[in-house]
Length: 145
Image (cartoon, rainbow, N blue to C red; front, top):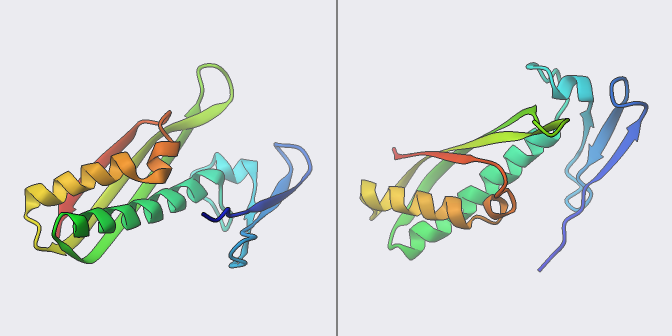
């Protein structure tokens, strides 16, 4: 199995510094990061580790859901997954991921609503990114279209 790589170059202090994250393996882009933007509501053109976790989780979950839906006898037509990753204070000090909400909507021919929801729960439990994030509460909002 492959190993994927990203690289961050950071300049300055936490509070005043900034950096760039490079998606090295895919070469699809370099993105600005900044701690002040990380903890504000508006990103203003910068990304954050939390947004990257959200991207990883939503894409991983979509793939896992599609595979499990097919194993359950369905034919996935379309699946849309949104991952909301929240950052907050850690009681032990610093910051931590305080929760993730996965929202999945999709059209799967051959699965009734109950089977769709069962596949959605199974995908949440078995997606490799979900497994990696077991220390973070993950909630699921799933419904067929």
